[in-house]
Amino acid sequence: MSTAPPFRYDGYQLAPAQNLLICRYSLGERRFAERVGFPGGGDWTAPAVTAAARLVFLLAGVSYYKTAAPDVIDLGGTAVTDAERAFLTGFYLDGLAEFGYRNGLDLSGLRIEGPRRERPAPPSAETHRDGGRPLVPFGGGIDSIVTVELVRQHTAPALFIVGHPGDRFAAIEAPAAVTGLPIVRAEREIDPQLLRSAELGFRNGHVPVTGIISAIAVMAAALDGRDVVVMSNEWSASIPTLEIGGRAINHQYSKSAAFEAAFRSVLAQADAQLPNPQLPGYFSALRPHSELWVARRFAGLTQYHDTFRSCNRAFHIDPARRLDHWCGQCDKCCFIDMILAPFLAAADLEQIFGGREPLADPDPHGELAGRFRTMLGTSPSSKPFECVGEVGECRAAAVLAAARPDRAGGKLLQALAGELAGLPELTPAADLLRPLSEHFIPDAYAADDLLG
Image (cartoon, rainbow, N blue to C red):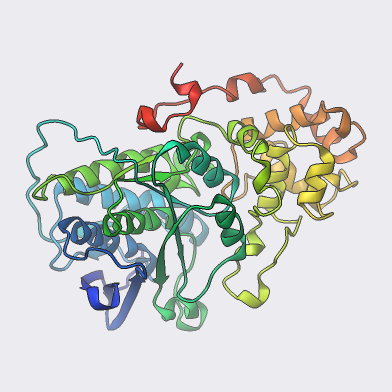
């Protein structure tokens, strides 16, 4: 653990005139401020908005804590219940597991100190929010596109997009336009000191950003009078990226079922302290489904095939380095290609990737082949720290794709599938195309195969 002074939560401020939430933190003499703007405005007097802002404040702190990763977090004057303290501890320890691993840090001794808040009495009955006004966080990839099409039966869905002030990603905006749905926006401005990490001697690494975005989405939903935030986190997001010494390290922790359940519990507890149940609900519409199931569903949504783009290089912080096409080289390009290959014609994927389809690489021993093998679990290297599917899904996709007549001449894919042929533990694709896990999806939002 670090010998740095405690990381302190200094407080948050609502600035309704500017449609702004300001969160303040400190580490010794250094001060940090994060600003989250909601340009669409809304009812800033609603108790649910203040309750949601408090949760944004609690979760956003993780980005500043990691600069030194001290062994004590001081909540200052922010009182939390025992359950909230346990949730926050898990958010830091599990959400920063990859950060700790990559930086050689043991965070297990982390202590969160601060005043205690009494837990409210539980509600007498579960409150169901289903006014037909879902808010869908939208990233422009196949998962959120499939979720949007699942919730279209509701009267007034809207997309939620968060970005830097004044900056919009074409890879999100183009498929968002195809939906034809209204957009609720948030503008997250991290403290500029974080962009100078190397210069200022800060530690750097992955944080559970989806958890932060989830809290911001709940606040945006409260401001816009929406009743539920519908996420697009699938079954495999719960599978650890790797395990070290019996401890799971999951790049996608804040997309996992464990986080979803814990965050729902914290929301319910916060809601119980309001005059009437007012906080939006929260669940993932894809939780019981595999990426293979999502890919099959997406394959039929041809209206999006020309605009969607999940390439890592489409989301570079520096707009000058941001690609307006698939790079065909990164882990996300490889995964999306492989998971869609069983369901889309090779010619269609070649067109989608603009002549840079990873599976079209003729070299079964090249760099791209190595990327595919890490995802298939046939390489000594571990699965990449990326939002990609688990090994069984990738293997099933490779086997299905290799059996397509239009893939018979693909040297790379046939080589990869051949390496899988002798493995006894292959999961049948049919098993991965059925619901796989428990979930919190209300019937009104469930896919057909959950209602049979």
